Length: 189
Image 1 (cartoon, rainbow, N blue to C red):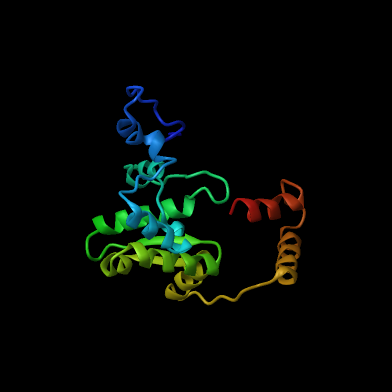
Image 2: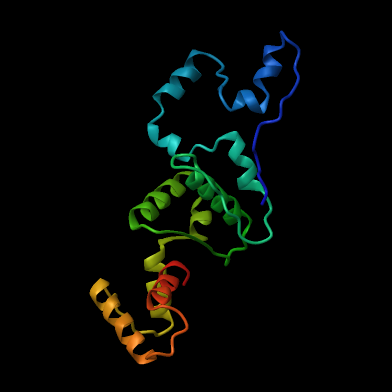
């Protein structure tokens, strides 16, 4: 597994060369250089919403990296994983041919809607047409419907009954204890 930015490389600069020191990645991680009172006021007047799409300089490596297949981005809550994913989707959409598509999915409807709103702030209309943003359950439902599969959502009672029925059908021919199969289905499948 690649670690794309475990630490920012230390760059030697002359002791009194503040301009050069502020241009290093380490400084860019912590400081913003403003060119006067007006720019500072403009930054201070910006809505908090802009921070929700702000891409930190260290995150640019993940956004622009060429992967041969899927990539996994790890980090705690609030570290910018979703922001990285949004900027990467934008980058990929910009490089796609007109009929290309990117699936951007998440587990919750609310987060999918939030991501869609934030992507609209950083993507062109053409890029947005190439990105499908949808929660996983809705995507699966749509996919099954397009395949002509008739389905219905089942809840805990029905799921438990289905497991009891499946175990009864298998009879004594199971190689493992009954709970193994349900756990395997829930955690793996």
